[in-house]
Image 1 (cartoon, one colour):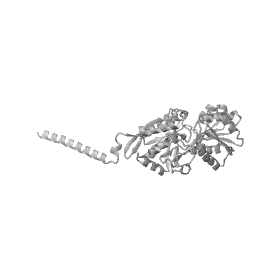
Image 2 (cartoon, one colour):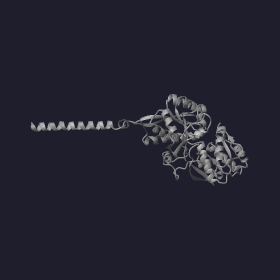
Image 3 (cartoon, one colour):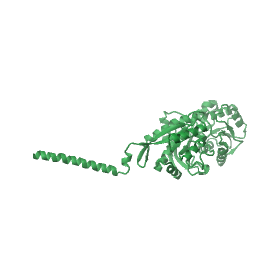
Length: 409
């Protein structure tokens, strides 16, 4: 009996000890700041994307969609977002803007009313004029992938509108600096640009940037329709501006740039061509032909090049090492989530205020600087960041290096 009683006391004593230890551990876990919430299952934050996945602009946005999805996965793989102790993964929902302003407005409406998103990346280019009214009315924070500086894209009328890729102004600054480096004898340039409604608003700013770097603009701007197929008349008009030392192409597709280059070279015009867009030189040469591919600069990305930020090359690797790669909207998604994290909130108004108070942010292109106050008339809504460039020399693509763009004025 004594032995049994002693054994029984031991069993109950061990059980009591286990219970006490358990209570202590639970109490310690509960008292750790944010531990119980962060350790739970991740929730999702829904972010919309509005891209032109059909129509003429899909040459850009079909690629962009894949890279937006890759960046969302990168964000989630790197821990997602932790807001007030709760972990969130990014859940994307997308709509097709169909390369028309009506299609963009319809896509924006679906994102707001059907998907009920509070954050959106896209659209690209001048298409923001079709979506901004919908987003602004509903206080949806929207991050454009590109800006052509038309009224209603991003200005004082769009307090919830932001720009996380530094075009068209930042890319133009980069292209002008690359032109000065590669073609020091150029003093006068002609300008050619899509006739998409942006010319009266954008080109005066580009002329000012050129003049600030010592360049003179020769002749009038030469416009072309975005959906143009025969560019020989455009090449003829540019060739007629005899006192220009180079041609500066402001915006346009790689098809347009390649055809302009092809037409100029066919006329015997060997002047440098500088394009501020991110199309790869290989895409330009595919249209222009190898014989025409000389003395051409683009702000195209060169994967695995010296000086590349690791995040940029990671997107490329996750895409299966495939070109082209632009990162207009993917960079917007990355920057948006960095600001959401910094704001520690999923309230668009709180995130908006945080964005406006920040000076710098890490982006896919390195360190981005918030600015654009003078250009857009609204504080810190535009992001400037470094850009690389490429050049075509006798049918070969040459990596030019990285340009320090700085803050958007």
